[in-house]
Amino acid sequence: MTRELSSSLVSQPSWKSCFSRIKADLAAAMPELGWSVCEPLFMPILVDLKVPDMFLASCWLISPSISFFLQPCIGSLSDRLGRKPFIIAFGATASLGLLLTALAASVLPRAFAAPAAVAAFGLADVSHDVLVTPTRAQMNDIVGPDEAETRSAVAGGSGKLFALLCSMLLPSSTAFFLVGLVVAFATIVQLAPSPVAAEAATCSGDTTQSRNERSSLAEEGTQFRYPEGFWPMWILQFGGWLSTCTWSFYFTSVWAEIQGAEGGADFHESVQSATRLLLFGAFVFLGSAPILPRLSGPSGLIKNELNCLMLSLLVMMVTLLSLSQKTMMLISAVMSRQMQLTIATILVVVFYPVAYQVLANIPFAWLERQPEFDSFYRGRLSGTFNSSIAVAQALTALVSGPVVAAFGGQLSAAYLAVAGVDAALLVFVLLIRLRRYLRSRRSSEQ
Image (cartoon, rainbow, N blue to C red; front, side):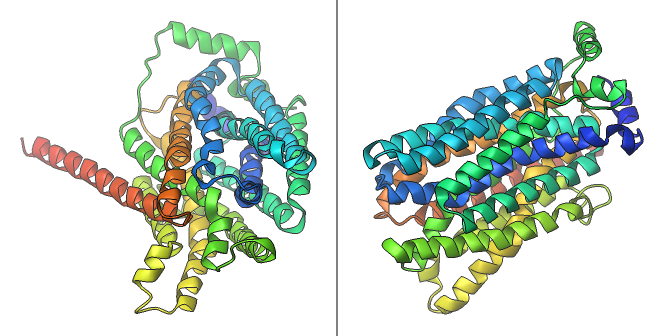
């Protein structure tokens, strides 16, 4: 599909594509709905079911082992067949997985509850991860880069806020069940036909005409290529998602750990306290959505999206360090425990949510602005970007459990390890950029 067709679609009057945009918003909210109900509740469920430390993160290996291969494939297929079939299919399995997780955790005997909950969660988690590719590609099909960035951020923030409210106000199983029903509703809405112009349907890939045009372009030999700078962006995304996955898996339990709550009522009270922090962060997450185009990009405060993503990863690294028991012990001589917790709270509530928005949205806006970008391959490129989620999840699942066990069950040790990886990735990308700069300088001198 040519840039001209996409541009003409974006410029259509909003009333012609209003319902399509609402559908795209609901679709974009689905991954964050699922992630955000699991973020505060699923790990405590496993801890409460007495799952051994070595296996705490192994349940998260299900999704990356599957979605690493699925993400680029689904993206490429959605370029040719349209986004809608894949959004509906994986939206349905996401909803089913959440509903089954609720039933497994609340109904089954303890001996069967853990494996059943892990299996149901695996189904939901694979679906949430894979949904990111067609839902984000669909948003960019319909609107321009800045609006897609903002709408995706607002949709994700709204989904996150709703899921965290459910997590804080409702019992765990009820929260999973209600979010599952909301995801089911968002999926059902995708079945409705969109009252938009024929060009819009073509752009989103829902018509025979669109598929014929795409096949024609492929037969003409449209050459696939990654835009320059794609892989440094992918590396930084990987670091961000590694931080976010580890953060999500352990945060409520780590907060209970640094509060000294070891089990029973104190543990659950600390988990609720951590969930409230996540809820406050969700308001910041949602509130920061409209400012993303002003934060980074051609008209933003930080013109270079790569610099913005590096800053985002640095914020994530510092936040993880602030929650590490080892870090707290090292700086205890110069800073009181209460001051450490205050700084950690500010990072968790204010800075980390903005960094997360940058991670989730800036790379796709950057992609749309590249001169070499071909919208015919939007799904494939989006899927390759999103494969960084799968790699990050796999590494977290394989390594974080043994790291925690090696430190005597200290969950925050996983945060310290990931902060070290973040630092190494930042240095690596800086070296790549330095090498390119020196090469460019030598070329200009010649």
